[in-house]
Amino acid sequence: MMDPAALLEALVAIPSVSGAELALADHVAALAEAEGFQVRRTGLNVWFELGDTGPRLLFVTHLDTVPPCDGWSGDPFTARWSGDRLMGLGSNDAKGCVAAMLLAAADLKSEGVRAVFAFVVDEEVGGRGIQQTLPDLGILDAAVVGEPTGLEICAAQRGMLVLRCTARGEAAHSAHATLGENAVHKAARDIQRLVDMTFEPHALLGETRAQVTAIQGGRAKNQVPDSCEFFVDLRTTPNLDHAALAERIEGELESDVRVHSGRYRAVATDHGEPIVKAALAASGRKAPRGSNTCSDWAFLPHVPTVKAGPGDTHRSHRPDEWLSLAELKAGAKFYAELARAYALEVARV
Image (tube, rainbow, N blue to C red; front, side, top):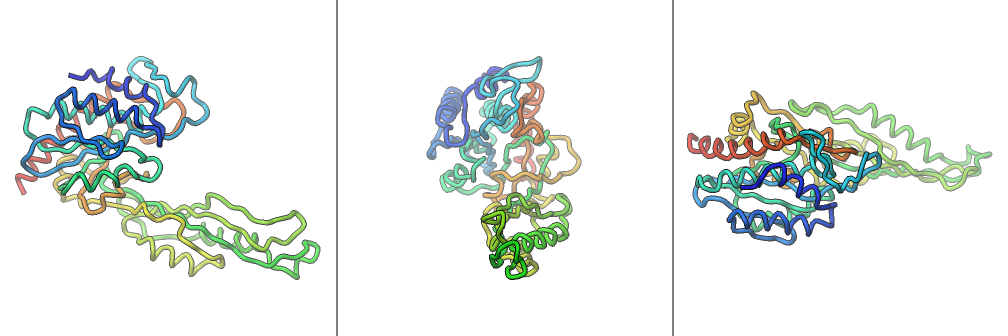
């Protein structure tokens, strides 16, 4: 049986920044094989299945991490214990979920409960791993996406729509500005319009607000700029259609508007779905909530899904990231209880 503390420490000690996950994937595969699971590989992705009858419940989380940021108090690639807390890159996002799912699978393996466990790559940089693996996984009845939520049950997740806007003007000498049209001024007017825009709120996720995240314009300090480009990030909700949203914004701005990225669609699961009921029962929570961060759930739009896992989303992508041993053990227990509760919930339907 895997020791929780040693397992987490070993996972964190293996660097796995997006694009360099091979060593960790091999390690996870070896751990699963040592537990007697029939491991399969799709590219660098690792997955296996328990049981052969009943609904197929997917547990999926990611092996990759973001690169380390500035501000760490020590080497981010060295796993360091401080009391109950293990500090190191990926400990919270999402190697705690990886460890908890492996422990849960080991706990469940003799019970006949059916579950698919998948550990995928590239989640932090576009979700290529889950997209590669899904065709091999077959039909899925429900899914649990492992992300640090403090074991809160997320039944809705924001999407992401990025717009590339270009304000066009006419160049002129800045001493004769009336002969031109200032594209930066046009962009500024549009940015204020975006700040003032409101969109229909979502029950679990609240409002969507436009955020201008990058801007560039002008060629010379003494010339009226003839172009200014800026990017707009909208963290969307399931009640907002990306195409309709882009069309509305294009109609209200002076600038040209193009969709730069829209593949991360917002998703939600009806609270009456068995997976939501089972997750709430396993966690002891009374109601689900929403999640502001994107994840591989975006690529499971037609599978009833919840997002849940040990850790705290506010620790992710920050210096001195950590996970406690108590959180890890609670996560492992939760995932195992969820698999059992889901099988019972489906049987009652």
